Amino acid sequence: MNSHERKNRGCHTLCFVQKCSCGAFHLHYRYAMVVLHKQTLFQIMEECYQWEEGSGHKDGRKSSSPLIIMLGIVSLIVPEEDFQLFSKAVNDAVTEELGLPALVGQI
Image (cartoon, rainbow, N blue to C red; front, side, top):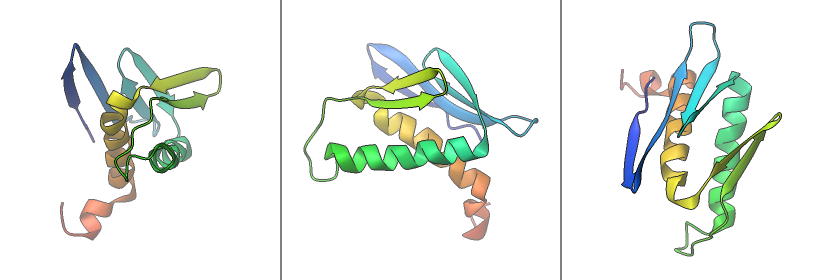
């Protein structure tokens, strides 16, 4: 479940999620790696959807406020220019965990 994505905007942004053999998920974003449980990963995906709807991306308006996710004492701040990359990595990991590709025949 590697969703490696790179963006060329001054610096290379690396964002992907891997499932560990212990069952946890490792979320890599820029220079940080956070270990998450499945439920937390699902909650992050929900927060991404809420941020996207609340920031006006669907109707063409842009917001300059970043997505801020609090994970215990850790905060991940995802600026607008990285949001699509971050959201896709989380969405791909959740899709894989739920087995959706196998359900629609995309094994």
